Amino acid sequence: MTTNTFDKLAAHDFSVGVELPLDNDWAHFDATKGTPFGVPDLTQHHSRIQLADKLGFKAAWVRDVPIYDPNFGDAAQVFETFTYLGYLAGITDNILLGTAAVVLPLRQPWLVKKAAASVQKLSGNRLILGVASGDRPVEYPLFGVDFNTRGEQFRQSLDIVKHGNAQLTKGMEVLPNSQSELVDTPLYVAGLAQQSPQWVGENMDGWLAYPGTPNDHIKRVALWREVAGNKPYVSFIHLNLVEDDEAPIKRHRFGVETGVNGLIKELKAMKSAGVNHIGLHFRRNTLPVEDAMQRIAEHVLPHFH
Image (tube, rainbow, N blue to C red; front, side, top):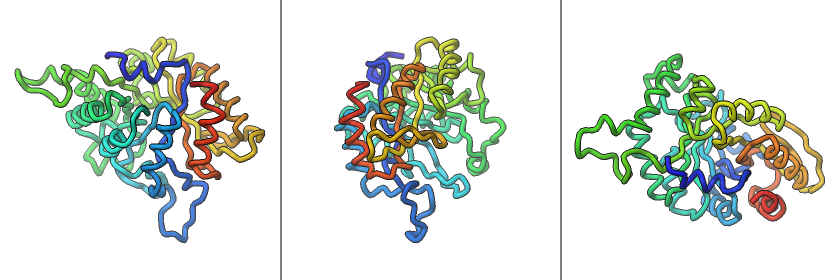
């Protein structure tokens, strides 16, 4: 691969982004409104991603949740992944656009290849294509896919995404990609996708690691460096940024509740652990999302960007 997008993400040893949706629906869920838990309010999605771009967050990460399952309770950003990335590409200028992550066994790989090439072209080379084998068993029968073979399906699909043009006859192309393959698009993997660490380190350009404490990441980063060298290691924090800047760190599942100074401390610990990028997830946030992003941009990002 070329290093165009990789260099933008790894211009510094450590950077901070956001995970979409930019809403705090988990913190303010109201059952009387008739919207199921886990379905965000997207009224301000346009202005909030533009604000994140303007404030200097390095990347915006979207997920791939084709079917809302109330038992799972998370519709992610609601909009279909690649459709939404095309929209985001048109209303932002600098923020990188990452997927965390496209579930390859549930998608036709040639269409993934074309969709990724399209987003990369429309965004001015800002796409980071994160891929996964998936973890929601209820979806697989709907797509005619055996959940138990998702690891094999992942490898087969990835091979087409990376090297499929060898199957094309002379003159055939996957437009709008001007190269023979997706050479300008880094491919990250979420988790291990039912593969061995060695395989992932050799075949992927970066790792989307599940949220954890800095100590958790020390162990995972060590494994990643052993199999992948200096390739990017990315993770996420479910954040509740409170108004008191001095509020101590309180840990909850997948993240922390804290003030600005505690967040700086947590991110410095992540950097020391070897993490290269953290995406902040605001759905637990009790402060308005705009206020939280403004505070972080003013007081936190200057320590890292």
